[in-house]
Amino acid sequence: MEKFILVIFGASGDLAWRKLMPALYTLHQQKLLPETFKVLGVGRMAMTDETFRAKTIDGLSQFVPKSKYSDEDARNFATNLHFQSMDTSEVNDYAELKTRLESLSDSLACEANYLFYYATPPLMYTTITHHLKAHNLTCQDSGWKRVIIEKPYGHDLASALELTKELSQAFAEDQIYRIDHYLGKETVQNILVTRFSNSIFEPLWNHNYIKYVEITSSEALGVGSRAGYYDTAGAMRDMVQNHLLQLLAIVAMEPPTTADGNAIRDEMVKVFQSLRKIKEEEVPQYVVRGQYTESQIHGETIKAYRQEDGIAPNSKTETYMAMACYIDNWRWSGVPFYIRTGKRLPTQVTEIVIHFKSNPHRIFAQKDGLTDAGNQLIIRIQPDEGLLLKIGMKVPGAGFQVDKVGLDFHYSSLTDHYIPQAYERLLCDCIQGDSTLFQRNDAVEATWKFVQPIIDAFANPRKNPIYGYAAGTWGPERANQLLAKDGFEWRYPCKNLASDGVYCEL
Ligand SMILES: NC(=O)c1ccc[n+]([C@@H]2O[C@H](COP(=O)([O-])OP(=O)(O)OC[C@H]3O[C@@H](n4cnc5c(N)ncnc54)[C@H](OP(=O)(O)O)[C@@H]3O)[C@@H](O)[C@H]2O)c1
Image (spheres, rainbow, N blue to C red):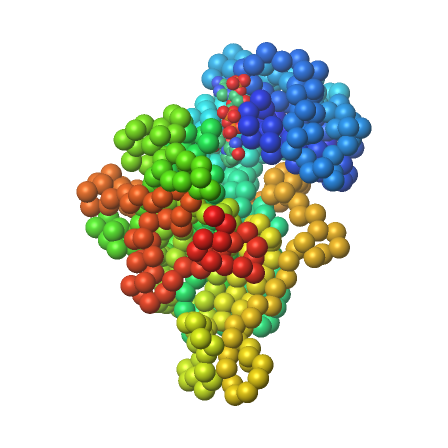
């Protein structure tokens, strides 16, 4: 691996502190980074290299898993860290940045391989790009130059296109790494392996055998300290436009010809392009929005969203969204993909449920209370990562009665079950120039084109109301009706993959 300098704009922020530095530390500990490299943190705060190192070590001791943390390794890692105090909106500060980078390159005795990581508020992304270009810091005459863009990639279609335009004036597409950290998750990548390395699933993976698909990503926490950002984004921009649509594409894509980055991303883009457009007037039929209201959980009062610090008392931002999507292609004709996400739901879980159709003719009685005879494959992204296949089995004893049982695999049962964090994988890939798990421009554009009419419809709350749901419940009743009108129902997942139940975590 070539030596490089990683420049983190926003190095004093939450993302760098909780995710990026722990990921880099772990890569360094596992010897997945070159022997020598440099991280140049950038922020407005006045900090020396030493203060930055001490602050980083403090963060590592909190956010690196206990089994991986050692003081010695942290100190060793920190020798590679430096800090440059600058205002990224101030053009003159870039000359100093350039000088600093040249001096660090000299000390590494390497070509000017620079990886710029944008971890500032997103409004800064175009400004930083513009100034880097103006200072000739994006040109690849000597060494490579890459840029990682954190989400959100635009606030709407127009701003996403604008950002693309600005980036493309400074970087070629293969220098741009748009991050969606869900793609960095081991369990998300395992969906590809489950589908395309086993011969038993793919023949059934279509409208002939699959009734519907559910994708859930729930959080038990409320808006927390992210009020300023979240109230301008909501569940649609924060989760659906990016993470949930990425999961949908991985579940629905055609087999790529190879595991090559572009082959996989070509197939994902085709899914986005095949999503049936939801016109503004159709939004109430396909989309349900919700916002959490005050409730009592275990005797504790949980504040309503509108009572949270930093949230307007009349906020019209959704903290919950459920949606029925259709993919208009040969494989998925008529199969609904229901996606849902929300804050203050009963538990934090991300999973995909594939509901297979029942047999055409039933010859056995079902055990009392068993309503759905179809098989289910549950792909658990987090927590209790694994797979669960629900099948019918004979209830022991006289006659033939069928009950459903689960065949499950849990990552935790692997001997070495450390699951690398998404940012470890993504940073490592980017440093090696592998963009497979990053979003291409055409994918981002296609997802924004799909969601934009829905976002536009939200501007009319009389036609598209936000339904209240008590904090700690699975969202508004209206979201159940979204499935019930098709004769289906949501699974109610628990922390434990094998369990389900409406109130299991309360
Ligand atoms: N936190 C997460 O878990 C998370 C997850 C996914 C995506 N993201 C995205 O990552 C980005 C950063 O998020 P964050 O949570 O780390 O935000 P944050 O805690 O508010 O940190 C923002 C950083 O940007 C720096 N900054 C702001 N204005 C600047 C300027 N004019 N010049 C130089 N530095 C400036 C701040 O440093 P100074 O104040 O010292 O300048 C700070 O280091 C955002 O786009 C966010 O949407 C974050």
